[in-house]
Length: 290
Length: 347
Image (cartoon, rainbow over all chains, first blue to last red; front, side, top):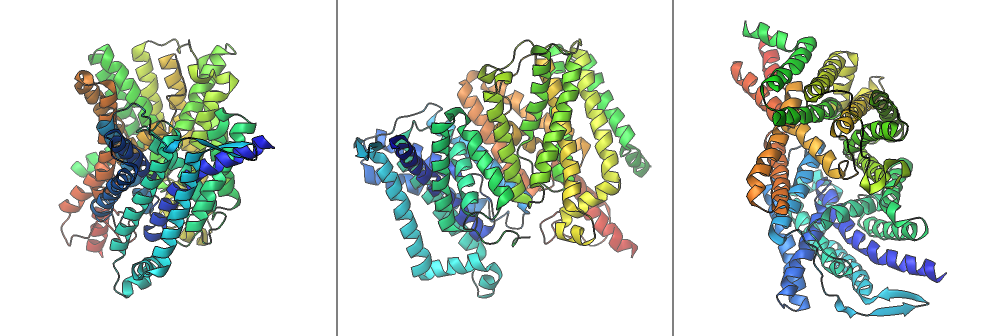
């Protein structure tokens, strides 16, 4: 019983990171219709920037803010200099473009930060909590807290501000939003900035859990992806739920089957989900974007 | 005159002969290093021809082609090292296995729309890679050693590889000119409209998918026997992406594009290897990723049909008089500008 609880709690911690990547993913998809294969690289940029700042003795909060800002700037550059000229591209072409971005960012990251894995200090030491016999690193609380903060901020931004209402309108009905004089390209740009910032935040809180390295983005991105599909690509709460569910599933399969097959299990879950319910747990429409 | 020449050059049989003759002639002139490079490019080209069919004509994305390549390679490896069978038998087994896997995946997933299908193939590729690492038969992370060659020397392998490319290109060229080809193009334009015409888009897509899987497995089988050693680090997601890059760089609907795409990407690879000799290996690897990625982004933004197909269409459009129609139509599929202008003139 303690093992089960232990695995589930570890899964929620890992799943919260997937959830943050998945939320960014869904955000870009909802606003622009683009499947962003480069989403995981924002987490990598966040982690590695945070490590660099931390290793120069910069305190936690400023380091976190600057790391997130660096990733947001990269997101803005992509939104402006890649997505504007590619605005008319087909779904197929856009998939190739974001795959290329993923590859290029991974390469650039390695050129900037080197190939070696680096150790990032946990936010509040390497302590652990004991919950009903299960052991939880305190960093897991930070990660889970990050999801709650992002979800609350995003809710506030989208539901309670004028800017967010415009963005929601652009997501729900791009044509009508354009008729009202909104520029969908501009909202696409904001979506890229927000998604990059959220992904980087996920990367920063995740970094102390493992050795951060410039190759982590691909795997995080793929898992975030699976989480987003599980929850429903066009649903932001779905992305969070899907990410956490995926974390629990991979943690349980690593514990009860074999950690060697964990990747296989995660993608088998994706395949089954695509076959049984391609719109995901909370998603609604599948073929709206014909 | 030039039109007649062009027509001859487009004949599938002529193209196939050229695809076999040119690399073979080159191979007889150049040294052993380049023979091995040409052989490798041939293997990639074989996979890319299949991707061309599935992505260029049917308009779908496969991000799991490395999985089929791996199935072909491991079939040869396992059949020869574990069961002492001749590599030829392994090659055929691999192609059959890949066809079966593609058929199954096709039945399950090909009703999905473009990006969901891309994800399903991605999932397949990663599951296949995990299986290569973990199954007892595949030798795990240490791979399989001592896979026997097809009793061929280097030039023999070159001929075998490009012979397979010639066969593959002849077959797919014939296919796209048949009724199936028209259906594939219809699917690419609109699956809904194809279904309304009474044709089943999933069936056509599945046929193209199976052909692409078989070609990838054939290439993988030849690779295993040529290299004599395989391990799971070869058949990763990164290889799938490289193959996609080769397909789109050259151009998605031309054999010449497939050859040039594979050769071009491999050339960048080699140049970086030479240029990177003074750098640390990790730096040269990172440089390679950066250049590949940026090339993919830039080419897709400005020449979404690939360099060969895109530039060809533009020059044809320039040769024909009359109003210049935009190459990019509203739905984002680039049309052949030359043909559109031709049609307008005739009417």
